[in-house]
Image 1 (cartoon, helix red, strand yellow):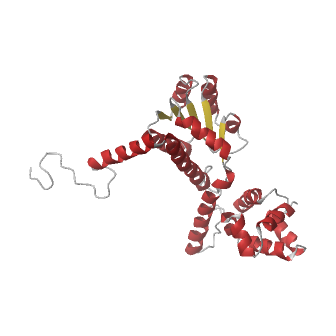
Image 2 (image 1 turned 135 degrees about the vertical axis):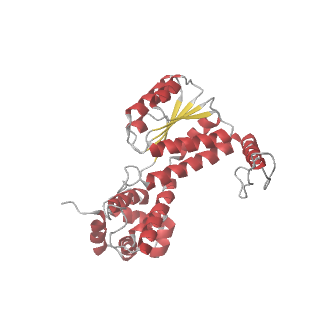
Image 3 (image 1 turned 180 degrees about the horizontal axis):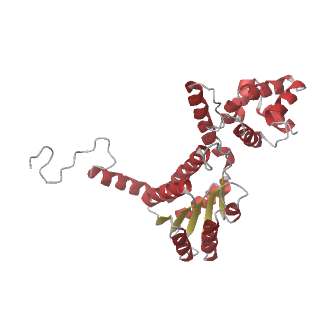
Length: 300
């Protein structure tokens, strides 16, 4: 039977040099914390160096710390309870809070290491000058992401529409052209109707930005692939790790597109905020509405 990753770490520790053994000890002592750390942080805690961390990962059969972290996250996903991969049934409330918080933080921290900056830059360039952007989501979580990103792009001054209905996704795709961009969001990346929509849009000349796991059918259709690998969730098919990583990427895209479009985007955001505030929307002290024109406290 194949040994688990942590068993391999423990076995490697026995004959490792002192510097590498210190790194392996930290992995065995608190694997969750290692998932959150950078090369520099892990090396500092071990009293070692970044090259030594790299050599330790290679000794374990990985190209580097990023690849090791992905394997470690997957290994940890196989443990825990049916409620959460990091949590054991007998854990106290304090332990549950700590483990889930660390898991969430590790998911967000891992986004930077996974991003292909060239693909991200190409996606930002395409979005910033697109005639129109269509956004497709498959499943409730991905649909929420598509809606959220549409609202952000719209506020930056882009013409953008998020489509929930699968038939309308394909109709919108057929109306695209070489000046347009479609954004397809799906963690699973295999919904046939979504794939059809992307195929139709690309056939019309539109560019496809796909946010999904690497190696999925959707990833294979991407002109610009934003690939995110996250561990499986114990409860939901698309769990909190996918949710948080996608939200982080959406925020990154929003800021980079705003930078790319420059002052007009910033001014538009300012005008939107001022307009909403004038009407008592998006303010912390929302005024009490009066529907009879008599003001607050007016008598009928």
